[in-house]
Image (cartoon, rainbow, N blue to C red; front, side):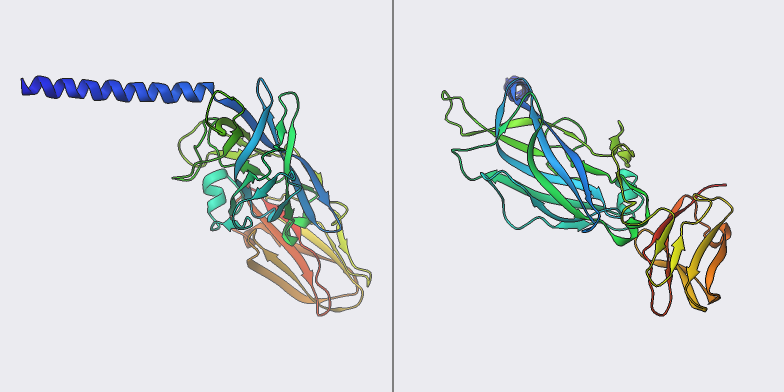
Amino acid sequence: MNMLKVTTKRAVLLATALFIGLGTLLAQANSARISTRFANPQFNAQAKTYTLDIEMQAEGAPEQLFGLNMRFFYDASELEFVSMSELHPSYMIQGALPQAFRGNDASGSALFNFEASAAYINSAIQLTKEDAPLEISDKQWTKVGKLNFKVPELALGIERLCPSVLWDQKTSIRKEGFLPGSNGVVVTLVERDPATRETTKPARVTGTAFNWESIETEAMPFGHPVNKTCVTLGSVTSLHEVTDARGYALYQNYPNPFADNTVIEFVLPESQRARLIFSDVTGKVIHTIQGDYKAGQNAVKIERSTWPVQGAMLFYRLETTDFVSRALKMTVIDR
């Protein structure tokens, strides 16, 4: 008799759990669907800044935004987060202003196949003027705000910038981020149904990554960068040379990428001592070539054995007593 009671109790508990689980699934299935993305990249050559719009689109019918947990990653070797701006006037950032958390040198490679560390932003915006919420269109993308980044000096040596920025979201299921314990991207909407007592409602969110593609895997890394949407940096640093009004010039190495050796040419206005300084994507100096060079054009041949690593992206600059060039990018590839 006691066993029967225990068995019955377990059956009731199981049925209750199944009912609650089914209810949760049905609630999720009936939730409004919101897509969000990063779009419209803009590069300001004078300020050396890069911006992206945050956009949303509703599915089936327009919705009104209540709040957004703004959680995303980006490649810290290509961008430095500065601020969020151009918010709709009815919204404010909650808590402290967003700050970037940068991982160690291996974090970007381990998680996302970045060439260097990954940086993470965790912030939120919320409706503060309830009489004028932002209407999220179901016909076109609606701008929510703008992300502002600084382009690091080391990244200015490349011809095109194609940075990876991705929402903290493994799949299209809400509240599932890349890091353990992360809720991922969360969007709440204004509840406009007069039959309910609620003022907000959750949404199912699909976050589209920018210049990054996910793969179906439970193991790291979860995807890889793709050079899909790029901006040209040629107006900041020419692909062919970095010049100075006094007569200094540093040229792009050739060939680039290279497997065996490469040549770097530079121009000096007068005979003097000069250095070619090489650094990795973190800015750490890994090699220096120095000597006394003649006025005019000089050439230095670099052997691949200088860097035993494979598939490495490096940066180099020219320095003298009174001149420091911007950095140019070079890539060592497998033989």
